[in-house]
Image (cartoon, rainbow, N blue to C red):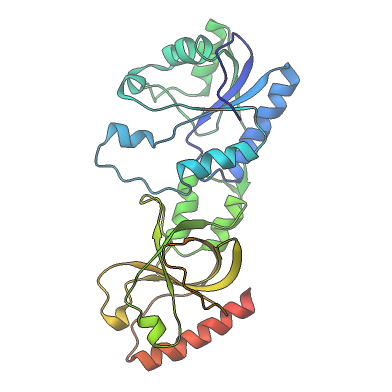
Length: 301
């Protein structure tokens, strides 16, 4: 997928941050491809590599469902023709909707048809709605079409809705809205080896992206991929209260696995939430619970 050269009136486009490229986004981009095909146009998704609020608020810490690199890869897999990474700037934030549609979309990118997501706004005049965009489009010669939303359990899917499910530990619901298993990737780093001492060696994950949304503290059934192989895993997120832990960790015990993977790349796919994290009276009591958790992982996976 390449960035298009500006050519007048050749593209049907849509705009969004596309965090996670979930089923709602896939539905939007499917509509875009159909509209483009009906009009003999190429399809284009315009997206922001960084969260716009990071530019407007220097202290804003986004919680993301996908890294910028994964997002571009996922967008490519939807089958659209082009993806234009639009770096959000203060100058862009100051543009009103008409200027953005005329000077950037129409003249710079050659957009003749614009598909607007059901909850999307652009330009600093955020009080405008789809009727205003259609009016502006009519005045400048750009077709503006409202997109339909993709519903899950009666409500539109959104990235913020998926994040709420993750922080509640509801990874199965989050995965259903994503259309794939939520995944965090990083490097295996050294830990305190408390798990190894109890017979449950763990790989401690140092996530590549500091802004990734971490699901709720607790124990999960997961799939761990390292060195091109995938293993069932018992995954724990939390502060290890039995050992008076001070820092939050992400630790995975790979079942039937005994290999030195320090500093290797590790990807963890969340499958099912098993139980909340809690303090045990002794390491022996914790080890007994971990054995039960491991059996539950085997049953689940």
